[in-house]
View 1 (cartoon, rainbow, N blue to C red):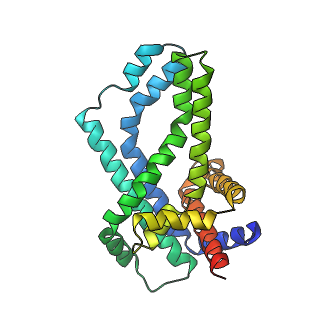
View 2 (cartoon, rainbow, N blue to C red):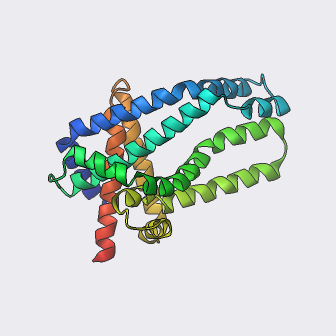
Length: 250
C-alpha cells in the first residue's frame, strides 16, 4: 500500500461519484444544523471561560447544568441521524470502491435500515472514544482554571489523550467494518480493526492526518467545498481499508 495508489484510487472514486458524495455532504450539514442550537450555550460558556469570566465552581456548574427536554431530544435525534448517515455512507463507499453498480440507492437505504440497530451497538463505543479525544482540549482548559498549578492532573490528562489517540488509530476501521460486515459481532468487529492496524500505527496515524486535511481542504473553496471533501475523506479511509485487507489476505 502506497500513498500514491491510495490518492489515485480515492480521486477516481470521488470523480465517478461526485454527485452522490455531495448529497452525503448535504445530509451531514443538515444534521449539524439540527445540533447547532444545542451547542450554542456550550460554545458561549467555553468562550467565557477562555476570557476568564467564569472560574472554578461556577464554570463546572455552568457546564454541568441540566439539559432541557428539548435539548436532550435534539441531541438524540442528531446522534441517530448522523450515525445512520455514516452507515449508509460507508456501505456506499464500499460499493463505489468495488464498482458494484447492481445495488440501487433505495436498496442501500433499506438494507442499512434493517441492520441499523446492530451497527449502532458497534458505533457508540467508537463515538464515545472519538468525543473524548475531541473534548480533551476543552477539558484541559477547564482544569487549568480550576486547578491552575496542579501538574499531576495535567500529566494525567496528557496521558489519557495519548491513550485515546492510540486507540482511535487502532480502531479506525470499526465503523467501516460494522457497516459492511454486519455478520460480525461487537468483539469480532473491534478485533478485526485491531488486527488490520497491528504494526502500522505510525503509518495509519499519518493517513488519518491526511484524511483530516482532505476533509478540511473544502474550506479553501469558500467553505462550500466541504460538502464534497468530508465524504471524500471517508472514501480515502475506505480505500486504505481495502488495501490493508488485500495485503493481509495475500
